[in-house]
Image 1 (spheres, rainbow, N blue to C red):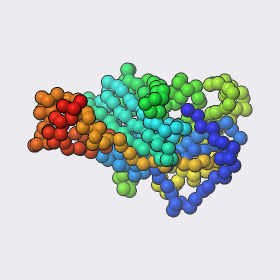
Image 2 (cartoon, rainbow, N blue to C red; image 1 turned 60 degrees about the vertical axis):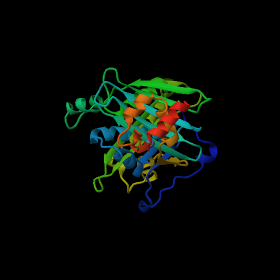
Image 3 (cartoon, rainbow, N blue to C red; image 1 turned 120 degrees about the horizontal axis):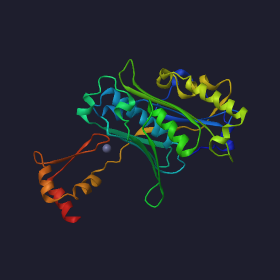
Image 4 (cartoon, rainbow, N blue to C red; image 1 turned 180 degrees about the vertical axis):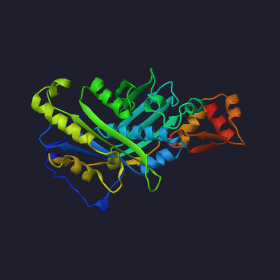
Length: 327
Ligand SMILES: [Zn+2]
């Protein structure tokens, strides 16, 4: 799960374009000069808004889902192969489940999608500004990370408790416990003050050193100071800076790390993507019994909703029954 850029990439200087040329929907990998520190910054504009606005989530729920999408983009873009990275929360709280996934198909574009399942009754008891733990965390709540490289390949799964004041805390714990990689990160999602559209952003730094394992690598005094500096500078980023459409990621990185020197590498572009297809949904319908299919008919059609993009596909009862007979 680490990204060590090739030497060619390391020679490329930072580009700081004009503020007018600000860019959204990208993940920008970077490295800090002279330190064994690598990082990634991510910014979601229209992609976050399209995914979150497809549902009518209360804002506190949409904020966390936006952060989960941002985390999926950070982690997914580290993958060096085609596949799907899925983050899923499970808890007994008012949001029993939340999912965000990132799909890579080898074209340098990450496809993001996500949704939240709500328990409306429990949600009502949590007031206007429920905490992160109040919404998605609980004693038994956990976050599962799955990396799926396709049918023939191994599936990787990691798990971490949903404990902490924010999703960033949970992710930090995950990296420390499961990957033994010192990691600091910030995630943010908020409505734009002017347009009201959702925006999301995040930044992550990791301490990487070849040939050393886990915590040992930051015991050395000089290394420890460097890592502390990289972490403190990262945490100095303001929420508004993570989201500001007029401040692109390169400018943000330059603002944070210009004294140390920061190099950036090729970005991954992010788009909203979903894997719902008519044929696949019809195949799912075909697994139900004749009676079940009859019960699903409303005004002559069967509507099947994709939980991710909230798109509804309509099937005739005849097609559903024909599919059921085939399977
Ligand atoms: Zn869909």
